[in-house]
Image (cartoon, rainbow, N blue to C red; front, side, top):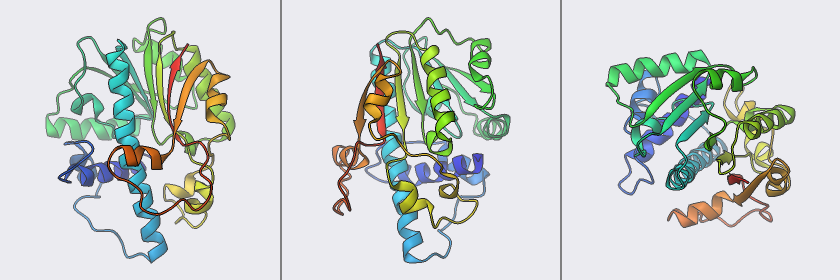
Length: 270
């Protein structure tokens, strides 16, 4: 699973090289290189596979920028606790400017955290906030591990679940959200990426076994705003198309079907 995180780092490294990059991730190339994905060219593929790869890469770039903005807004509102669930090769602790007193928790299993630590040592990377790693499987009692690492549920937290929920069955998604909600004081914030309706059919059905898309299992609810309201969150839903246009990267092809609520979610705990 964490090999997928290295693939995401490769996409971020490619974006970082663009003149008009939506974000700069100086560590992404190091993660990709350590994982054997840099430098490299795409493998031989047919046109359909090429389009799927480009679509997934594009969505990773847009969602990264979207969640960067969620974090900046949370910091501006006074939130000083950040929790990255399934953190993978996320380098926001190192590449973003954080207010004094910010504590950032990276929650993931030991294997990706150990791999990441070796690259960070090699790069002599210095975090711009207090960074705390929490090695635990999200299928286990991760709230207890997070509390033991110093997370304070009485203070507002901004939670990020990026590229995570699509890999979890629906009951696991519900449990994850219930646990997040139980650890979230009023004023907490959340940034989620959800698998848009139809994405598994379009990109996952013919995916190569073992690839990221082949492991996708759950899509977003029909009404994500109402779903999150049921858990005590006031949410705003954005489509990839809407965000891409706002960031100056409009999608040129027309929607193939009526677009439902989008899979880029920001929410506030009331």
